[in-house]
Every structure is written in C-alpha cells, then in structure tokens.
Length: 489
Image 1: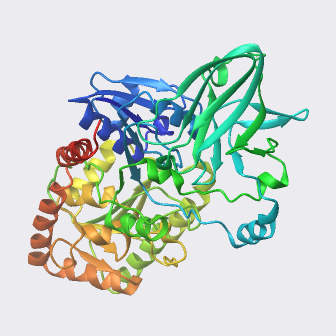
Image 2: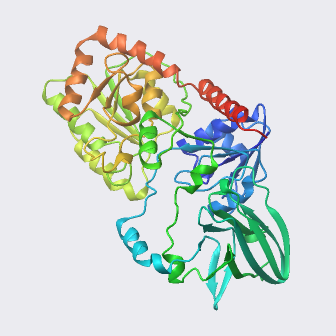
Image 3: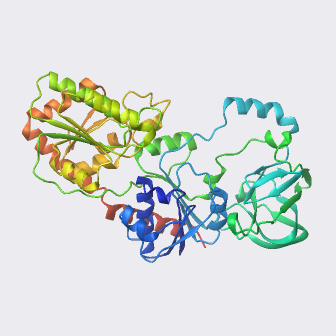
C-alpha cells in the first residue's frame, strides 16, 4: 500500500515525533511510506535525532493548513494522522488517527447562544479555511471546506480565474477520488455529496502556498446547495452563525487510537470515539551498579504550561525526608528548559539550596543514561496539585521517562494519575502517591527495605520491556492489517 504519515511538527524532534517515526519504521518494511509535514525535513537529521531507521521513505512538504494534508491524503491507500490537536479529515481509503491527548470539540456556551439566536438567518453552508474576502470577492487561496447539512446531496460552485488554474473538488469521505478541473475564465462544478460524506466537500487549487503563481486569483462566484443559493462572504452573519461540526473529521478514520489508557478514557469522554491503545516505543536503558540516588527526568516548566513535572514540589518532599533523618541519598533533577521557563528552574535551584540535590539543565543524553543506570529510585510528579477533572491534560499523558528508568532497574514512585498510574502496578513493579507526605513515606519504605527495593526493581525492568520499540511496531502493523482486512477495496 501507499502510506502517508502526517505530523505537523517533525522538526521539533520531540516525543510525539519519535512515535511518528516509529510508525514510519513499522510500516515501511511492507509498504511504500511517505512522511508529510510543513517544514523542510532532513531525513538524515531525523534518523539521528529521533533514533529511527526511515528506510526507503520519502518526505512531502505541504502548507501548515490542515486541509492541505487532507487533499494530499487522496494520493494514498492509508493516511496516518499523528499531529497533536489535528482536525484534518482523511480522503484515503484507510485512516488511522493517533491521539496524544484530546481537546474538547464542543462549542462554548457563548457560541451555542449566538448560534441559537442566529438560526433563522443561517446559511445552507459554511466556508471553512482557504477563503478570504478581498474587495468584495470571495478569493480561494488554499483548500476550502464547504460544510453543508448532512442530508445535502449536491453542491454547485462557480469559480473564476483570469490566469487559468488547476482545481480539485471532492466530497470528504474515505476513498474519495477528487475531480480535476481547469478553471480558465468562468467554470461551473457540480459536486455530488454521498451520504457517507457527512455533508462536507472541498475545493482547492492544485498549486498551494509558494508553488502558486504570484498573481493567481481564484474567485468563488457562486455557491448553491441543493438548489439553495448561499452567500459566499465568509464575514456574512449568515455564514458565521452556522455551527461548525468540529467532530466530523473523526468519521473519516476507521481507527482512533490513544497513547495510553488515560488518554483513551478522555478521548472516549470528549470525542465519543477511541478504539484502543498503541503505546509509544520506549528505548530500553542499561542498568549499572546502584547508588543511593533518586532521579527525575523532565522539562522544567510550571503549572499552566501543560503537564508540569512538579520539580519544585519534589525538592520539598526530599527536604522533608532529610529533616526526618535521611542520610547518604541524593536527588538529581534533569531536564530541558526554555527561556520563558528559566525562572521556574531557578526557583527549583533556590529551593534545593543546602540539600544534596542537583538540578541539571539541558544535560546531554550521556548524563541521562549515567544517572538512570545508577538510580535506585525514580520520582515522577506530573499531575500533582492540579484539578485533573477540569484540566486533565496536566497529568502525564503516557510517560516515557518513568519507563526508561524502570528498564534500568530504578523503582518508580509516581503520582497516582495519568499514564504512569496505569503503567506502574502498585506494590508489583513500583509505588504510587497522592500527597507529598505520601511520596516521602513510600520512598522511606524503599530506603529502609533492600529486599522490597530489589523485588520491585526486577519487576519494573520486566514491565518496561513490554513497551520496547519492537512491540510497538508489531502492534502498529497488526492494527493496519486488521483495518485492511475489514475495509473492502
């Protein structure tokens, strides 16, 4: 099969991109795979930074507009979407969507009120993306979604271009085959809307962004839905009061999978979808001679910027243990830090003054390897102190670092929420905590009981092995094979 793996953020080389790279590796063994993204990508750099093979794959650059990826998806048998917060529909016969963590799709209370009030004047369609009003004309610069009623069956558009331009038009549905038309002067296009398209069609120039001629101007002159004329001004009140069906994109994917049980639960709650879990691959770390050392790895940032690793609170818990008589043990906090979060990292350092605590900012991978090899205990605090019912994204969504530490034989002591809570089985391969006093008490058990620590460490290493890259890749291949078997050509 021809396969596309779409990630808008390849060049950030983060954890999400490592997972996307693993998807490429898993599928490139048996299929023709193309990576799709926005920024230019050097494949050799991607191999080095992401630790993936990328054998025999190519890269296609598309504009950052998600609908550009939708139009590209029509060229493939399978479209894999691994872009955070993406609402990009797929036109491929097979669609696989990976959820790192869901976002709410429902309209706000204010939007709901505005739409109820505006319902009597609402248009029969809404134009989404790619169209702008210039000098009283609706100009199409990129892929434009036309959202119509789900029972609408025919969309008629009139396009005009003085320079001549190639255009694609299609209903939005799995296995769509876009119509290719040349617009030279004034052209009418009739787009049938099958029931499975759920009331969505797209119109797009073939050439997008910098590939388009500088003076290209594609004008949407008329839009008619089932014989009912629609204003083509995106600013018109009749357009703006039409509710956006934000969840429609989900219907174009046969599988919506999450990175953890925690993410799956919230995906099912907010999206009404969620077809299982495929966990990211975790690199197994080498164990070494163990020291009286507690390690925590994670980027430094405070609450409000996402799932903060809570290093400040971890230092306070360690201070409590020192005041209770802990001797000979060290705490080492390792992680990156952006300029805007530097004050938080400095606050952690100030809190650690006078304690056997090290704060290692932006340390190289060799330092992380050495500390995980020597660590007897691993602390993880993401989610602590947050209202996770209101802000569920502040818990760790999956948690690669704790599993890496487990693979090196460190006993994980993790906050009892989010991804780590479903990975670490209490009293089997680690411990969990809810309060800082609880964190200190659970850690004291490991400090004072060598046999307990050894038993949990051995089980933790076995548990970590179940998240190795080979298992992740096989799970991906099995999922795609099931999808292909269930979906007729």
